[in-house]
Image (cartoon, rainbow over all chains, first blue to last red):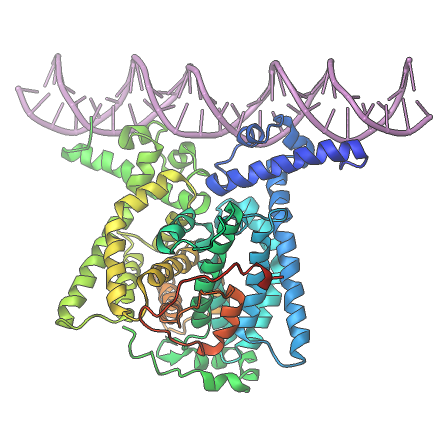
Length: 274
Length: 274
DNA sequence: GTATGGTTCAAACAGTCGTTTGAACGACGA
DNA sequence: TCGTCGTTCAAACGACTGTTTGAACCATAC
């Protein structure tokens, strides 16, 4: 009734499951949750319409498991890499770029690994975060909230000069730039137009070309995000964000010490704005 | 047969049009294009189901006109403000912050003006950019491509040190952070929790409070985006995104400047990543 | 051999989708 | 007063939605 166990069932049943996963993934990338029908999925997968309800219990179950298949390994790898770098730092707190790398490298590795993600992995990641369907939104926020919280703490330690409120917003902006960039089909079409083609001698496979594109894209994205995270603090209501924070939250005061303060010249670019 | 002309028809017909617009707007914010049905719209608008096809020719026509109602004034105001600042500069090229302000200020003004946008205007703007429906994507890219091109030129003049390819990407990231931030219903719920409430003496109206929220949000967003746009250039030759990230820690990366960015990728960097 | 149990299948379920129809309404000019 | 025309209305259209059903399949266990 539930999962496949014997050799025969494992071969047949698991195979249809995978085909349905792949079909749902491709269709979700193009049409979103509401725009993808079960008949589209099963037709593309070469499976019977009832197979979705048999294997996954319904449309919602299919998309939840489809996302978890890709996103669970991603978040595990992210946490593992973050812990590894923390142990390697021996007490020294990680830098902002190192924390960001702990988010980027596993995503890139999965995009390179066809078995666990494939060339469309990053697009899937982005689409999942911008889909309007409440089913997916609730699923994602429930399942991956601990990981996000852990990285939020890591960024807070890496950027002690940024008040917690401000940092929460900047991480939100960062996630937005990431999700939108990765989700947009336009972006991946623009790569070929904007970036010069790789001049490798051996004709690269389709996968290798896409992987190189991913790396170029994230190489462009990382400096942008790091600069944004470390930007001078804004002024709210005539006060600096730091003052606003210290007036409203007691926690910010504990982070005022440390080396991060010298890095921020809070007056430098303020005058240029507006 | 087509639009209303006489006094009577202008009162009745235009009124239902507006009610349908408002209903479609609210539902589109929550459910997206595919998740919003004509019956949901007409029921909320208190109109007959056939009214949508009568006034707009169909679902696609409704959403196109609904978006144009909000976004046309926005883009006109953006271009007007940009031209105004250019004339005020008397030949001196505008700064990055000024160009960004020409995008922000009209959006904020429309969000403050209930008649031409209202408190949900920024959310609508964001949702429109992330909706997966090909109908809306094609409509937006066709209709507002000239405006985007104009601002791209303005940013290019404001940031002469950034190569055009790189700038195109950074504007894409910027648009992503904007759209995702504005679209997310979570963001607007977080504002109350993260930002200290305004300490005005008079009890603020609901609109005034939302406007203040918008201003705080964009005040936080602007330094982030400006810093990202002005970030040190990435190095794309033979390095992975991870190494580029860790090398650019704390704005230490070198400005290669001009076109000094060598784009020859020497060899495959497969081995560099685990 | 037969029985078992996971899997697939065609067919149909009730419901919703966007759209169309043709009659009715109601203010206007003649 | 009558005809006109823009607008609204209930009702229905065929197509599509997600889901369910019960029979058929087939390698395995007995």
